[in-house]
Length: 302
Image (cartoon, rainbow, N blue to C red; front, side, top):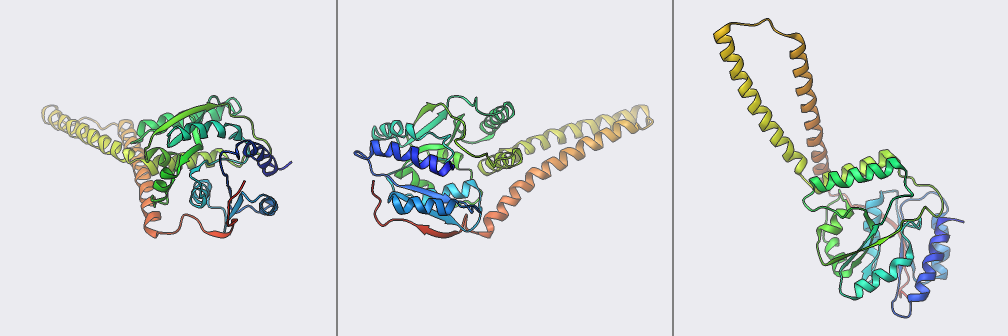
């Protein structure tokens, strides 16, 4: 059974229970899939009037697809979800209860990551610690994109025009009253993840460099300290030479210093390049994504 079938079946069961109190719409973003996913979703959309489909012209990546879904969602509250059922629809009722009590954002935090490999759990923990150490506004540990956003929050997010996006940080950056609930993250319902460690590394770098300029500031401090040490050491060499004459130069120490400073310079230039690259992306003013087609019912019903 395809993950789309399993997802809609589970979600439909939840909606059937809640439809007496709420009206629902499901906005599915097809991020340039090349298999039969679009046809399968259209079959459901013709049968279930609460399903809409947004087809992007190609694969623009998770952050762009998520932004498209948020833009096209029309509800008073928006809940981003993955279709692999690792974001269980059953806790939507709990989210809505907090929202009805006045909370603007309801974060869903993974109680554990036992379904992930040791390497993925460790790298995820390192990312959150590194990000929160550097970020101007830390993000809650273990909270992904799965959360409830009030319409006021969504409208605020839609005013943000940057193209190098890290939505987890943006959801937190806008503020508003927030509450957190925990859930057990199950295994994938079907299929395999397309997130390789290289893609996860790229996402982590995008998240850090799109959210803070502290890495640049750190190198300002490092540069100042190294300059100060160089001045002191130069003064030491000058007076030692003046008093005791010239020593035989040391090849090893000179080589080590050159390699250390050369490596640090290249690393610092790499960080500067990351920011310059993002400035270039923003300056081109290209759209975050391109929509190929949209299928939405005129009236969203349950």
